[in-house]
Structure formats: structure tokens, C-alpha cells
Length: 321
Ligand code: DON
Image 1: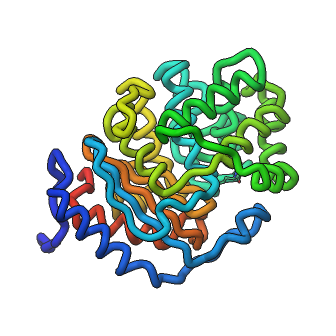
Image 2: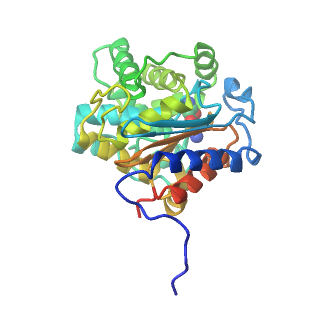
């Protein structure tokens, strides 16, 4: 039996700009009062976020941009950095080595799982959970920690089209509390799967998570992956098309942790969430959509962000399937 659906079918482009603007306005009005979910408190600096903040933004591959609410407000990028650092590292090491060294399969387990490493013979399973992100950051090119950090911070800034800065308070607050990530890095070292000192790797990863972005920055970063690695704001080719495609594949499979299958079933696009409440969704060839709302569900994904993405995916015909 065929059930009727009012979702638009995916075409090659976003609809006309007027329709996109209307959809953004509607999405903002519809979900700005949703108050399900909790602000996380395991990183002290995140616990202070105002739970009612809400920003949304869409940027097309042509560089057109529409936003509503707190879309210019800065927050720490957290796990969303993982997708873009993977894209940068994948560009350096190539398709096969990235798959072999970091993995591409979903863990089916929470983002900070140690068991996922143990169940996989001591190897990380994908770059979008903490273990795989630590392994990915360790692969950043450079002889010294500073050179590796330079590669990561410059690369993420190129994706955003502006120089991103660190929230030093958030960094300090997390580095004093990231005992679990330090443990994961040590475990990977014990299996011989990272060669960089575990403390240095954890510092690299924790620092990348503390970079400040706005919802508008995230939408530009997403639109860059949507356009095969070309930033629509600056025109810079940040990474190649192959690395871009591989990053999107990994995001489709793993971007919302153990909830990635449900996400793909409902929304049908690659995406990446972060524990500060950011979420970026990519409509390949069309653009990037981003949201910021700090209340999270049990898997660590923004509640309003998921609802907003589902609505827009339907309204604008962005679902890939
Ligand atoms: O390593 C951590 O726990 C945080 N810096 C980032 C985690 C994160 O964003 C996962 N998100 N849901």
C-alpha cells in the first residue's frame, strides 16, 4: 500500500529564495518553544548555556544565506569539529589509509564508548566518536604539536571562511575534566594505534572542540562540503571532491552517533551534531543547514535541531532518498 506524503522530492537545487526564506521563518516559529531535552553538565563551561537560545541558518552552494534567531551567537564547536578535521586529514592521507587507520562503521554505542574499541580489536570504528576523533587528530600532518594544531585550526577556519578563535575558558574547563578522553587515548596507545603521545593527542582534540563558531559559520562549513570542498563565501577550494565525498559518507553513517540510522531514516542527509547544541546538515550540491539549541536528547543531539532539520528536509525537498 502506498501512503501519501507531502514531502517535496529532492531535485538538483534548493527551491527559489523566497520559498527558502519562508521555510526558515516557519521552522523558527514552529520549534522555538520546544523545551524537551537537557543542557549537558559534564563539561562545566557548557552547563551555563541559556537553554532557550535558538538560531538557524541555511547557506546555498551559490553563497545565499538566510538565518533567524541567535544565528550569530558564538558557541564551542565540540564534536562538529570531528567531521571537518576528518575531511582535512582524509585529504592528506587519502581514501584507503583514512578508512584503515580510523574506520568508517557505526559503533552503535555512545560517543565516548570504550567498549566500542575493545569490541573492534583495539581499533577505532569511525572518526565521529571520541576514540576515532582522537586517532584522526593524531594523524594531522606536522612534526610538532604546534604544527598539527596549526593544520587543524587553519583548516577549520578555511571551512568557516574566517579565522576561528578559541574559548580559552571552555578549553581549560574541559581539559581539567576530560579524564575519560585521556583514558581512551591511552587505551589506543596500548594497542599501538596512535603514535603521538596520548596527552598531546587529547590536548589537540580538546582544543579543536573549544573553537568558537556561530550557526552561520556552521552553515558555511556545511555548504563547503555540499559543494565538493569549495567554500561558497570565499571561493577557496578547502579540500578536494574525493575527501568531501568521503566526509559526507562518514557523516551519513555516524554523524548522530547511535541515532544515525534513525536520523537518516527521517531526514535523509549527512549531518554532524555536537554536545554544545550545534547541528550541521548537508544537502549535497545544494547547501548547508545549521542550528544551535543547547537542549539535548539522550544520545547528545539537539532536540530542536533535529526537529528543525526534519521540517526543512521535507519542505525544501532535501532528503536524498
Ligand atoms: O570530548 C567531548 O566529550 C566533547 N569535547 C565533545 C563531545 C561531543 O560534542 C559529543 N556530542 N554530542
